[in-house]
Image 1 (tube, rainbow, N blue to C red):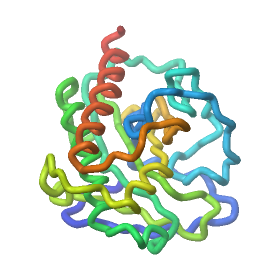
Image 2 (image 1 turned 180 degrees about the vertical axis):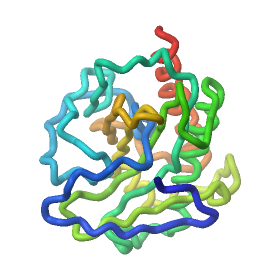
Image 3 (image 1 turned 120 degrees about the vertical axis):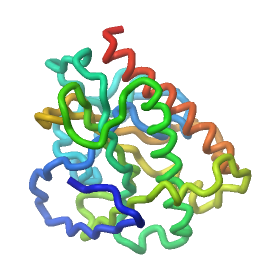
Amino acid sequence: MRQGTSRPVRIAIPMPAERPRRRAVLLTALAILLPLLAGSGCARVARPAPRDWSGFLDDYSRLDLGEPGELPYVYRNPKARWTEYDQVLFEPVTLWRSGRDSLTPIPEDDLLRLVSRFEGAVRTRLGAGFRLVTTPGPRTLRLRLAITDARASDPVVDVLTATPEDAGSAGGTGPVGPELGAFIEAAGIEGEIRDAMSGELLAQGIDHRRAGAPPRLPTWEALDRALAFWADRVCGRLEARTRGR
């Protein structure tokens, strides 16, 4: 299990031609980012070939095309007993990119800032409805999220993790750079939720920016508002499911 660190961590992951199923170590909050940067029109889209996925999830074969209003790709375990859970183990958010140099035009501080602010928005909202824990236990969901711009066919995938210090000043009004804005438009969000004790997969999904979405967010302040809005919507849905509503 990858643990949080005091500094940003990069892990270069070689991607073999036929990648074996990878054990899920981080975990993910499902109903994922970028509709917040995307708007809500949810058209059904064609399923990419498996090698077009990043490799963050263990098993993409479970995914189905989402219904209108859902994620583009989603899986929910029909046997999941959601009302048994009232705690969340939220693992560090990661950013998956195609090799260390694939996003060179974007300052790394901006990438770390994006990851850290995204994680902070989700963690804050989760804490309003669940007890947040740091170790697996009964009645606990393990939540895993990643921002992805990589494919399983890439020779190397570079994984970047941020720390809270990388968030910078909250509510800053500085502009979002054009390169980072383009990355946000192109990236996806992949996530899954598992039972923290047994590892049973309860839900997973993939989201991305949709056609016809609003223009790019111009400032970090606007991005913070969008992140907070998304976290409130997604975590609210998870709360409703665990409370049987």
